[in-house]
Amino acid sequence: MKKTVFLLISVLIFIGCDGDAKIRPVDDTGGSGGERPDQETDDSDTGNTGDTGNSGDTGNTGNTGNTGNTGDTGNTGDTGNTGNTGNTGNTGNTGDTGNTGDTGNTGDTGNTGDTGDTGNTGDTGDTGDTGNTGNTGDSGCVGNGLDEDDDGIDDNCDNCPSIYNPGQENTTGDELGDACEAPWDYNLLTEIAVFDPFYDNEDLWSASAGRWDYGDGEVVVPDTRTRANYYYTGSELPDGSYSVEATFYTSFSTDSASYAGVVFAARRVGTSTHWYTCLLERNNSRLGIWRFAGGTSVGLISDKSISAPAGNNQWRRIRVYYDGSMVRCTYNDEAGGDDSIDIAGTQVWDSMDGRAGLRVYDDRPSYTSFVIYQ
Image (cartoon, rainbow, N blue to C red; front, side, top):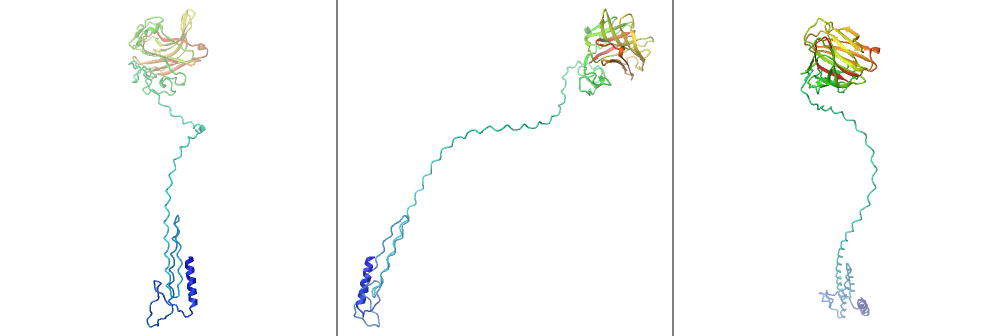
């Protein structure tokens, strides 16, 4: 740069000293000017050719190298050629891209967090609706092959084995079918305590007198002169509500008074046995309740005339109910007979427990079943 300034100053001084000098164009190479046609040649000194401008310094290579500065254009001499434009400095090379840093190491897994506090106990759920009551399972009874009432239900599984009830209706849901309940109060009785169809319990019976033929489904009194009781000794009557029942038939007619039925509340008093009995006097169709309280005779407490249309070989049924204060004796038969008679108050003992059984007086019935309900 300093050299260039110096050259320019020298040219100016030279031009200033020669007033007649004229500026001629210079050629492209900065040499002596060529001849111009149709013009006289001047013998004045040819102007010095201007120095070629120095090439600019090459720019330093930066990180993204800076472009080198363009060299200054040399001053045009009066006759000298315009100095060549200095070469543009080479663009510095672009710096290398820095290497990608190494991927950092994966951090250590964090420690497992502390166990959370136990959650609060949830509210108790609402009580579900009560499920429907399941059907009662089969009783699982073991039949004995007998069907006393011919209703298709084995005696051991029948809830009323002496009375026809194929539907086994049971309003109260106890162990006793409706057909065997007290008709006026289904809550009076709940179960069968004794049922004997007269096949294999002869050892549980005791006769007060006379002959009683037990077996093959019947108890037969062969002698019409018999006046006696046949007690069931397998159990006692309860101290409370109960019922005693006997079913029988007769196979002959009679013109004399003849009685058959049940005995109940039989108990020892001193050296004798006191008892109550309910009997059908079939010759005159009368139903009566009698009592023996010692002595030589049986006292009639109450009796009535009834409709008893059953004939020979048709079943008849005598049944006694005791509810704790009243005794009711009922009669039914195969032909539709249906009646009853009651006693109460002083006619009934304070305690009506004891034994029960069968009674006959001058008759010859065939009993087919005996039942105690409680």
